[in-house]
Amino acid sequence: MNETEEVLSPEYVAGLLDATGRVQFNIHSQTDNKFTVRPSLRIRTYESTARRDVLGMFLDSQSYDSTRFVDGDYSISYFLLDQHSELQQLEEYLAGHSAQLANELAFVTSLSDNQFGGQLLTAEDVYQLLITRDELRHGWRPRGRNHTTPQDFSDEYDVRPSKVDSLPLPDGRCRSGYSEKWFAGLFDGICRYRASIAQTDEVRIGYTMYPIARMHLTGVSKQLVDYALDYCESTGIDYGSSSTRHDFQVYFTAHQNVRKIIETLLPHSIVLRQHSELMLESILPRFEEGVHTTKTGFYELLCDCLYVGDRTGGPFRKREYNPSYFEEIWSDEFSLQENRDEDTKTRQRTDPFPREDFDPVQVEPELYEDIGRYQTVLDRVRRDREIVNELKGLYDDKCQVCGTTLLRNDGTRYSEVHHIVPLGEPHSGPDKRSNMLVLCPNHHTDFDNGVVSVSPESLELEHTHTSALSDRQLAVDSDHHISTELLRYHNEKIVGEQ
Ligand SMILES: [Zn+2]
Image (tube, rainbow, N blue to C red; front, side, top):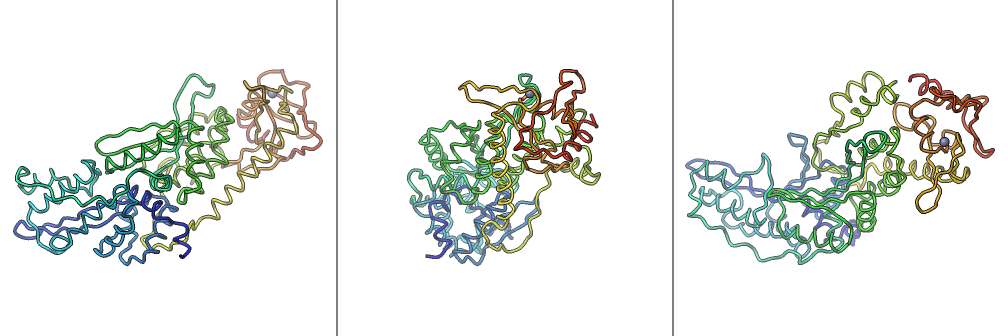
């Protein structure tokens, strides 16, 4: 058994391909109302490098010659398999594991003798293929420019639908019921992490945000949907689902549900492993702590959610609430946009979410080619959390400005950690103790809003609008060195520009 086989089990691969692979028929009109049809399997990466790497690794491990990675129009990247022997081989590999694709492949490969490629077909024959294909998916079908519906076809070529019956369907070689590994593959194939944002008067910053794990499938069979929903039921985790004739969605919202589904699937996860760890180690803890209830925290968390979201890919939709939106509306009180060089500014305005360019080349199936990058972020985040917790402990969660300690409902203490120079662009503050303050939420907001300054020498505090802090000093523990340089930056760049 080689390394790839150890990592990728047929059950996991089946879930992954059920989510990403669809059989399609490329119809070409020839002379005298005759057609050729070339079936192929199209496997989409949903614009995720990690997904592309894992799919590429699997396809290479099976030694498929016709594996191609295409940078199509509209920046859609996919693998294409169109050799009969390879589709047959894949059907055998997936038989008993997949919930949809094995049947589609069995149907296509059963056409080999007379209909597969090359042969001239009549309009009725083509129509028959199309209605059978839709029947295989129980009427569910993908939308889009590459899809010819039976209706489109019969209208264009004058087929009389009543005269044509569908072809016999293949015997079920699909799995019966879900399994955790299969679901993990399905989840890895289509899930995308996102932040959902809504405007509200109920919180002081005017916007709420919560994390979502969303699976969005198009053109899937009823069977596949049933198994996916059965799995969700079996986990006992709250989920939502919706479906139309074209697609099917399952989503987990609120941090506790997102956390549970990720923790449940992580042992089997390959494509999303790195992103899932970032969710567990960094993003969800910050939602749980309420970091998103301050403007700086909200903004930083939004940027981090987008970092993970964009790398988990999925269908792209224009986002109303993106970082530039908040930079705009909070620009008076919020200095994130300042200091950004003109070049970046213009680019962000016109294209806030540039897609990574996909090279139209053969995939080098190195698992996680950018593992180093994820690891760096993950290490940074882990280190940051450790320091944060340690520092809160040092002050017993007491605000360094006013000395207040807040209690949660369960009696445990609550405090927030402020970065004197914000971590994100354009400030790029360090993730060190010397850049951190333990504060109550009010003073955290005051620091974010740049209405409190601290004398770097005497540590005396000054509030822009009230005298409440006059004669007060920042309380600093002897084990906590605060950088005077960073305080100076805060006074100049964050207080000074308000
Ligand atoms: Zn305070």
